[in-house]
Length: 305
Image (cartoon, rainbow, N blue to C red):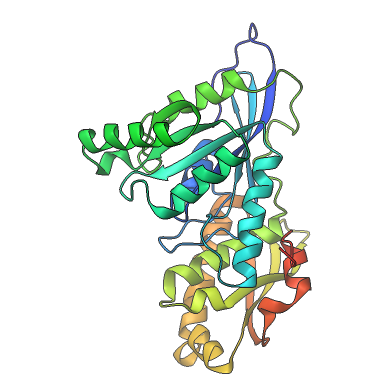
């Protein structure tokens, strides 16, 4: 998102960490601001696995939103790595924004986050999301309860899906980041390499088309990202699952499911990159990939979190 540049304003830039429980709407806010998809979105929780930076300009300020994995009570090694990644985003940020799903209210996960912010003496901004789905009386009560429990500089009521009141939030952020030069070129929207973005888009389609817990038992890794002389891209990605029966589900009868996933991912990538994509997907079994340190290193996650 780019607001009109006002030359009279000082140049500002900074990192803004969006934290919250899973499915609070952090990725939708990031994508809305950038004006393009840089972080995958799914109705399933725990979709975001690593820190994703969405970069945009508002007036004379370059805002770098750090979309963090949802914070929840971890049960597995990957869970612990994701939660650790989220909190690392907080430590590196110029501003911290707690995003709360107004429909869910002040639940146990949000209480735990507020308690840790208080313990670390981090003053943040409160963003109540999905307010278009909640009655005003409930919103006011929720805001009061949260402000009594935590230390918030400001409170905003927004809908990331419709864009309601997001402009006011962006302006506040832009006005309160430090003065200084921009960190990235004006046209850059993310620091994620295109091959990793392609892997994330494929993983989003897997979340969309597969059901139950299978998406959490798989990972997608880029093997090749090669731009050809005609401007098109050849992209080869491998979907790793833990068991042979999971591979059968991903492939589908006669390869129908993997074809459907590939077509949807290719179309989205072509729309985003405005170039032809030759997308090749492979499905392989790698038992216990979730306990392989190399898989964590690829995504900047701490295997020992």
